[in-house]
Length: 86
Image (cartoon, rainbow, N blue to C red; front, top):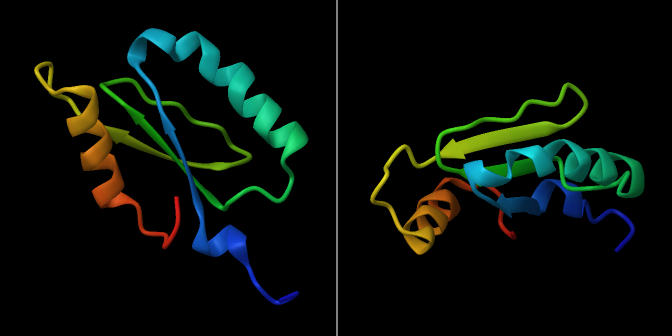
């Protein structure tokens, strides 16, 4: 079991909204500080705004639809996750 690389098989999905963009910086700073062996890929599910951090891989998945429901956005995001587990 010591060879198991969950960081490559698992992804972190952050389902959020453009309205909460001010919380993204502190959230990801805490992730970096307290979760050193976090999954390699982090998916940020939001409407139109993107977030970039040079220290971690964040894949922005945008809905770009105003009439899209929360569950439709989440489904669209999950269809784009490459890892086996979320």
